[in-house]
Length: 308
Image 1 (tube, rainbow, N blue to C red):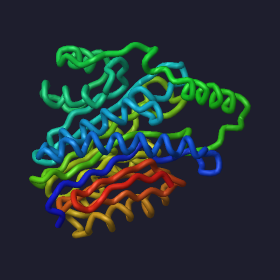
Image 2 (image 1 turned 90 degrees about the vertical axis):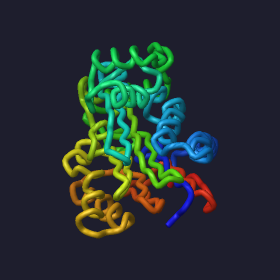
Image 3 (image 1 turned 45 degrees about the vertical axis):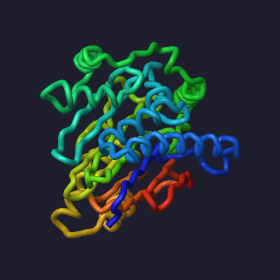
């Protein structure tokens, strides 16, 4: 058992192929992941809650335009942003989630407002925005969320669709950010946020804000934040499947997570990965695509970041 804290983050599976990635881009991603680890570690190092740590980490990821969430969110096929987020507290399975929203600077804080200020778990549209405003969250305009890279990717995707040459590049199909943590008191938490798929239909919602699919936490077993082909993750209930294999099947975290991602997800032609942590602080981060932006920190056991 790890007696201190553990933290794992991801900036999405389906990274740019290594053959097309510049050293400068790789360095920028590693630096961004390190900054996010700093934010989560700062909470945990002062005996903070796992829930506060994953919230801080995901806010940091949402503020980084390199990743598909918050400021770096991709565009729908109509050229708009629709963002999803969720978080879950392993102590009592409290959860909050939002889907299809635009405006809050940090969608994960909107999800937390749903959890803390309402009797609901998942809210959408104007209702979710009203809760966010009532909670005093910071809102930003379209100019803040616009990034030229995401806009150019949308135009490229639409042209490929029109020409019938659209490929299955995972970097185009999915991208999400997330964090899982175990604090010094043994509590687990998970948080996930995403802009969705490039050129998605307006109104599309993936697995990220769905508790048990893209986000899950229970102190008895594990905390999970997933990233990948949302439709497949939804159909497989990926996050809950890992919990069930641990709770009912007696598997350890590593075996359960690898079985779901490397076997089940692959068998269903899905692409992606996840970060997960168990009640002992063990971290798992399997993925079945070329890479996944990720970072980890174990108190007294080191930290690191990786892409491929």
